View 1: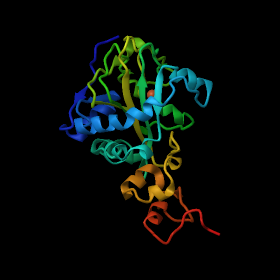
View 2 (view 1 turned 90 degrees about the vertical axis):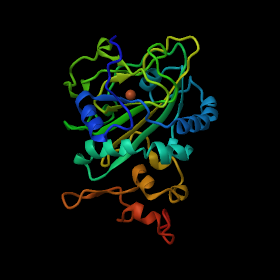
View 3 (view 1 turned 120 degrees about the horizontal axis):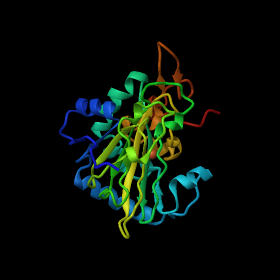
Length: 289
Ligand SMILES: [Fe+2]
């Protein structure tokens, strides 16, 4: 395995420069992605719910069971669990800038795809190398459909299983074999983020320590006309969603994808844009009788 040679930026860097490097290399690290107080407050919120999750839980399919193993606690539905997640992390200015540059050329609006906190215990084995964008493997497109990230909520070290990334693999032909010998560990301190593309091959590494829990978080965005990995409409009751800021509602997918005049609209309700109906006190969802 090579040493950590992934490009490293800070929040002070120009978003255009980060986007250009991300498009070229498929992965970059932003060292100070989350402010210390945001990181600490979010971790405190996650402590209790994470401790109640079983690492040996079952998933939807045996493939998922194998992929996630039995040494990791998982928390999803983050937009409903945490205002810090919803308003400070999901709406981080760098995510917006990267999505505007990388996703907006291929959609009318982009959307939040998935948020997932994980805590990986010692003894966890590495994941298979994979591409997150293969969720949409039926899609015959050659452009980027997803901007993804792994945010370090604790220090990521080579020993505790820092995410393994293969730079450049987002542009490889899909039939090319993925090999761990090509991967770099995303060694980074708590608060840093590994930003990558849906086509970039990566995997969680082995946690070879005896007592070092590695806590991190996947956060991703995709084109507005794709189905999202997490069903974000089921995360919060509609009455709660109506209290969220409009931009938050839009990112969570309550905004119709309006491709007119070139095409039609997706995600409409009563033939209207749901996000417009959210602020209409007189309008009642699910009451059309
Ligand atoms: Fe992944």
